[in-house]
Length: 118
Image 1 (tube, rainbow, N blue to C red):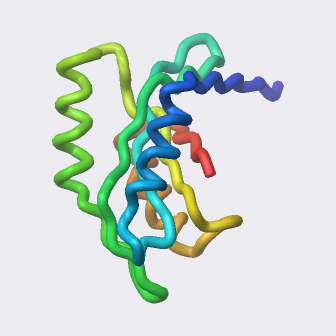
Image 2: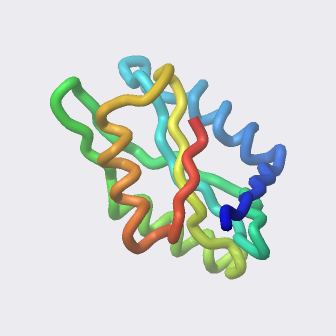
């Protein structure tokens, strides 16, 4: 039996994503980041997010994992009920080959079934 999953995104998340995109470095093609929220009874509620610094070229992507870890720890101190529910990517249309690597980073330990906001 297939179950449906509902995703609710709070307005502050949209504003944070837009702000991060507008403030990105001139040479950056996109912004990536972490989505925070809760998962309860088939409902994913995205309540917060933060951008994660990264360098990306045609050949590779390097994510500042230490920064992501520290930011998540700081967010947990403010709101302990928020967990990592997925990740975000802006600026590039469609699926990018590096997106698989970023998704793999969020999969195993961070979020059980990470959602991607693209």
